[in-house]
Image 1 (cartoon, rainbow, N blue to C red):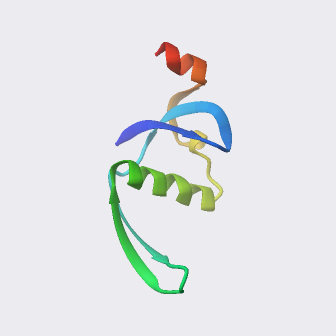
Image 2 (image 1 turned 135 degrees about the vertical axis):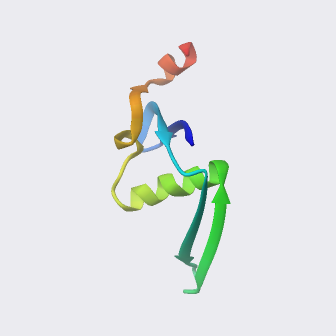
Length: 76
């Protein structure tokens, strides 16, 4: 699904990014236990966004079209 994203790492910049609507992830919890998680909607988008950070990727490299400032967003 395509939705608006922003990031605290790049203040006042927003853009539309395509992400999976539903995801399944495996992770290691704070006790060292392997876990699985299903997520959808905004939670799935957030996980994908943060996983990109772990890979050194910022959302701006995935923006479809142009990026917008907060002022430009208000006019949309």
